[in-house]
Image (cartoon, rainbow, N blue to C red):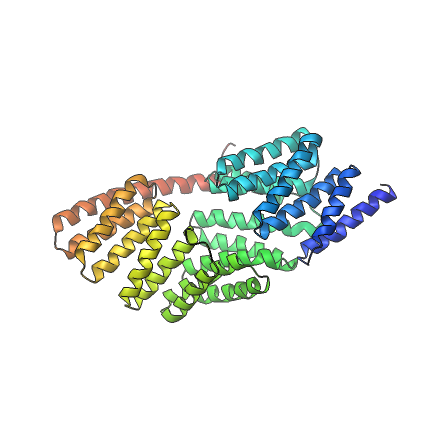
Length: 423
């Protein structure tokens, strides 16, 4: 390596070290240096600088600037191939997945990045790790756990310089999500703790908040609220320090859930309202609707039915606008239950029947069972035992099919997990 090459590499490592330690970056300097690297033909270092710029604007939520550098990287990649093209394809995949909500297109871009990496004969563990994590994560989102496990196993096998080992934390976090999806919550905790351990070691405060929030959510599901409060309180402190409003909104929501479940309703209300405050201008998103429903449930627990109804109406409006029918079914069932508690039978039946009509178009077994359960309770309360029996039979048949399907999925998942498929 020439002295000039060494100088450029040392210069990049100094800036990248600041980025990895999440210290303030001189963006103008990075823009100047990436142009200089391109001019001198250092395509790998140019690509790394562009990757930092794209990541920076992705994390800060500046989609316009993200697209500017993503498109520049793509134009360069079309001319040069290699590193610039691979990183451009990866960022195009994120743009399709996160901003355009087109997972299919995202998969295509990630697969093209993998093909380009193989065809150009590159041997760069950092780039390979990024490709495997992207493919694994998006495969997980569509339920292709065989591909996800294959990619994550390859990602963990990458030999990286010690300073970059924190990048493997994302793999452990996604493995935790897979275990959580299959109701293996204790194994999910193991992977999330592994991810957090790595992030703490490398002082990755920005990334650690999200992992800690996920861990707190699982503790809530296990009803281990003491552990949940410890983890989520630390996540709240870090997210506030790092100025991460989106993560803070999630943390406040999970804290609110814990307080609601432990009967501390006023503290629950306080945390849910703070969650909404941190989701300004997000009124038609699913997460916003979820917090509104959590507020409604809290007021219902406090027997403040008028306020509960107000938030159920808002949650219903928000959920219908974000077009996610399974959650709309949940809100309708809970709203109907509120009416039933007040003996408002006409209103209760109206919401239950809306939910029943909606489940005809929803492939969500839990919501179908939930709807039948509420209709059974409604007709029992009305002493219409014939209709109640009808829904009881529907519930029984569906529950048995769900049990068989989940048993089959569980066996297939264990085969994938322990490498028995395809042997």
